[in-house]
Image (cartoon, rainbow, N blue to C red):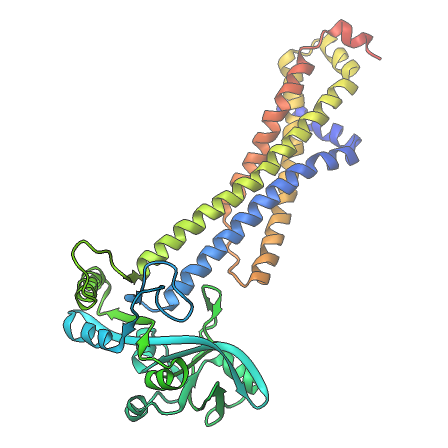
Length: 403
């Protein structure tokens, strides 16, 4: 009986091919939207996770202020950090592998008549070690250059691409405001981005050079603290927090005027936020499926009206109500299933294009695809039941009189 109902459903759909195509369009758009949104959301989550991981393992970041940080320093009215804070952490906190004080600004770099708006970081070799970043060409800073505040710099691969056309940049000079620095090293290409910023688009100068020639003060905006292993991160974070409270003379009842950020917590928070956003996008897209279901119900009601005489003949020659009900339920389910299959193909194609355009991984999830298709079929059953029941409950005599 089921196979016969399926055969009749395909026959009815084929007889009204254009109307059937327009009917499944809503379901197709709904399934495609769900798959596209969820896939792109998962790809973005994966990209954010990789960006956090690229900052380095077992890493803490100490910065002044709690909220409303200004672009170039600590929070409003909050004392900035000092290089001495970093040295105190290195001396007094156990299980610390590296402590690297840094300051940064967004500046325009000039070289050979070409300019590039980029990030300039003042720090030393410990920063690269904490970030697990290697020099692909040239060398690191020499100790004398760091102590003397020499006019030298290490640049990212993206800077070389933009300012020197991807050629050799060693020994070349870059102007940063009043500072002209010589390139002594080129960093290995990260090949990704962190929080929307290209990590290869960076220029690193010695911290004292940065303080004297760019920032004009001795403060630092960020201190990287790398623990010896992952198991020590929690204890190191507590010890750093206690030490910083002591150095900043905070009373017991005073809140911290600084932050110690654990990269694991940041990653977990971002995963949670991206998961919620992905769910919301999927739910909004799912509304299209409901709209498509309403379209199916509307068309099926029209179909019942058009085929009233056919239904009356079937009932008059002995067809049971359950058989008529099944026939129309199957027809609605087949319609929504066809829309779901087309939507899967369209959704995956759009997700692939979107991932390529946004530069995020294309991570299709088979479970999401199956759930979207299954939900589209349920939409067909749910919205097709009322028209099917109406058809099954027709009075055969009245149906045969219908013109």
